[in-house]
Amino acid sequence: MRVLRARRILPVPPSSSAPDTSLPPATAAHIAAVVEVLGPLGRDFAIDWVAECTSTNTALLDSPPRDDARLRVLVADRQTAGRGRRGRQWLSWDGASLTFSVLWCFPPAAPAPAGLSLVVGLALARALEQLGVAGLQLKWPNDVLVHGEKLAGILIDLLSGRGRAPAAVIGIGLNLRLPEGATIPAQGGVTDLARALEAPLPSPATILATILAELHRLLDTFAAAGFPALRGAWEQRNAFAGLPVCIRGEKDMRQGVCTGVDDDGALLLRTADGIERILAGDVSLRPLAGDGA
Image (cartoon, rainbow, N blue to C red; front, top):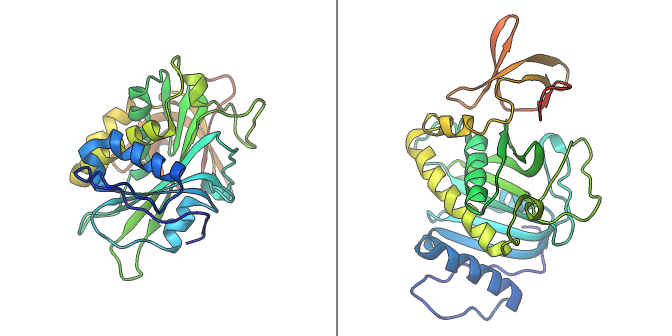
């Protein structure tokens, strides 16, 4: 695991009051605060919080921890080589974002996790709504918007083989307080949680715990019933429902009207030839000029 300036810690069970003295005080305090907010649910997580690493997704992919039925979480104050979709770099500034990854093992004999990135986006949106954010929208397949501006992004990496059960590394990057004038190449408007909230910005530990709790709930639902059980809730927040859109791939471009998603999480695009299913992959979703967010 390419992690710098950090040591591993597992959360202290709620029944124990013994502090861990092997970590820097700030790191131990962060983890203790997350576990306290999670309450009894904290026993279902194993949390690492590091000052810096290359990429939290890459770290979990390169050195996946043992399976013990808990959700493994790696948080980094700063990523030096954070990744986004299509090989893009996730840009971050000190103290400006919350970046973390969660390792989720698929249930035994589970099929391919169709729609997983949409489920994660829905969990993130619900958690942010609980924190008081209004105007949240979901952009297929992996972005969270506020009034059309990007607030958070999701990157899913699948982990299989290596003598272990199939799993997914779920990476999340959430803008907390961007520096003045910050821009992201190839991205339209961006925003942050500080601007999206009318109240003061909660602590990173409170934000993380709220997201983890909602992610835990929706992954349980997803494991039991698949994406169809959550499709309606995702559709309610679809940023481009009924709008003309352009789908750009590596070699081609398609235009049509976004009519939602199907039970596998594929985008449904209405064209002159009928309804086309657009599968998650190297595609970019943009509204046509003059048509909404």
